[in-house]
Length: 100
Image (cartoon, rainbow, N blue to C red; front, top):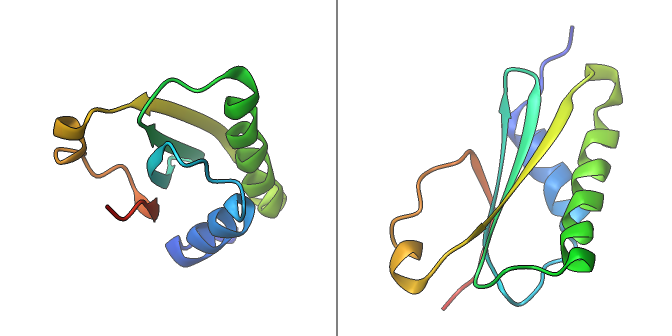
């Protein structure tokens, strides 16, 4: 069985997120943990349902790139303040970070 590299995962995530990053997003991480692809999106505020759907669709595109590997998907949306942003824990491969 073929294994998934972090480079393949990062490239897939960046392609899926292209033109789909909202201005309120601070960080996006992706990781492969025990056959589960986890997309973690850190934002400045709570997202509306249509904004959340944008990231669920992106996760679906990522999973679609690896259908032969039979992965499950999971997404975490986390609202952070300025103080908390400095203390973000490592949650896999960094895909996007907003420059401030």
